[in-house]
Image (tube, rainbow, N blue to C red):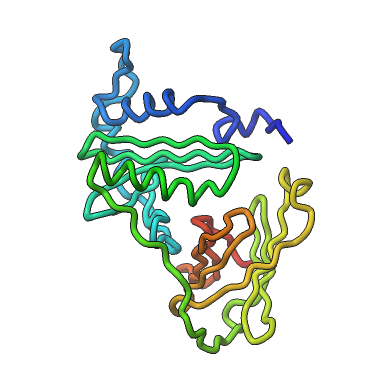
Length: 238
């Protein structure tokens, strides 16, 4: 299926090439001028975009632990690495930038196990060009401890998805229902088994990302409400 509404243009309606994406990265690695010398951003603005503004509770492994203005912010090999990923219907995009090395790596692909490809290809390129190693991905505890489901069960919802967290067979399962624009592509609910990593911190595997353990963390907000962070997205309890 092709075709997103024009309102989704900034989120994935742009067709581009890896070369153009690296040109965008070069703008951010330089002084904010285009190849023709046109001033697009000030150097202070470029630096401000890479300043951490929000903590991501589910950030672990190669998942971002903080966000700036538009950039996901990572600390790999003791160095700052910024990036932004995206996915639409059949396409996946990855961009990683190492500011202190002046290095950027872009991957655009339309099939296959895209995250595994990113780790294999971009991981090797970042190590060779910038001396940065991708962190190991988190895996569940080999022996799963008993878990009290009471603090987690309930309905969590945001634009595009809802999750019904239930107790099942001595464990916890998040039943995902895709809503909105993507509902026709994924009409059936998806069962996501939550395996323990730490207290309130779980890992699961999603059919859209085979072989990858996705972090899921339950947090209590300052107002006392509960929220589930899954794959970097916040989903409030309703």
